[in-house]
Image (cartoon, rainbow, N blue to C red):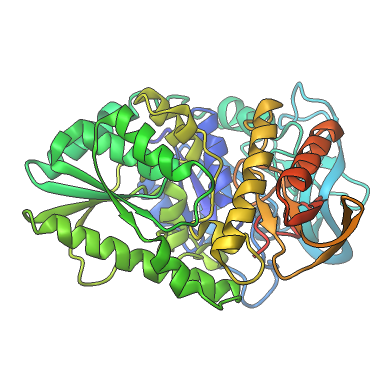
Length: 514
């Protein structure tokens, strides 16, 4: 990494990836490193600045992530966020205590004139998530902001190059969070603003061409933007040497399988093998209601279907490479972080069997989701694929509360299609992160339809705003749009007689119900 980049030190944060993304949003390169990184290792990387992330621990707890305090003596600008803020305070002689007062969600911040908040409103709303608090700033540090319950909500040293905040500026719900980060990175830490996605596609095409040479390669398409962009890059690099495999497991939303088979092929000219595995998946899910068991079954059956298809392809000549749409967050969550950040044993559904001996091609490994979308647009992929809302790997299988059956899948598809159509018509499908539609299949709701008593199913709609999926706020959809969605679903989906709106943020509730 050149000395224009930023190291994000990960203390097991939900938000470490988002911090890194926000840094890149300021056109500054970033990478995530574990909290046990040493001062020597930091010095060798020669970063322009360091950001200390949040985390779930207390700095005074025995099992708290260790931090090499010598990092703060290297002369490199350091910015602490939440737990990272408390680590800075604790390391530099300040005081962190459990006050008995917690702050979660939107909180009013009262700032003071300072380098950190220069030219920003001194009163602003920020996103808090903490139980402990800094009760005394380190010597020679000035307190820059406070809240009703947190007297030290931000501090800085005389130069501003050692600074921190108790709140989360990286989260969209902090009104001026990005402006605070940008100000510190560019104006105080003097980071170079030369990171861009503009030439990523060309570079990755060249890299893939050099890596693959004249060998054959396959790619498993999920219907999502990540695998589609990865496949498009490799297709540009090696053309007909690439064969894509699409496993239609019957758990996609209405029209999505057709999108892959028709629109993606039309845009790229890629050779596509479609595996119809709907009956296979339904049979395996028969009688299963536990959500984790569902996930494992779907992962297992996906691998079986993909394995068979890949071997059929390999029968026509050896296939040496496998394309994966691995993103930078996948890399970090699969072992690049610390503590709770190591949450994925494999970023793909279920992983790949040991006997599938492929060399991996991962052209998106350094990118975040929105950067991938930019590359997809540059490559001319259809908007329907580039801007498709995030969708869980197990698909509709975990949006049915109860057993997954063909009948229940059809009910959910109809309801989901209506919700998506009305949000699209209202111009809201880009302003919300996603809108899961959930079928409470094991719940019966009393209703009255056509002057008769009915016992239908409730449908839950869950529109959320987010950029990282790690935090989310429920989207404020206009009442008239909600009315259209509810009326259409109860009129057009005969098995449904009640539509419910989920108005819970994350935390405390996840985006998906199961």
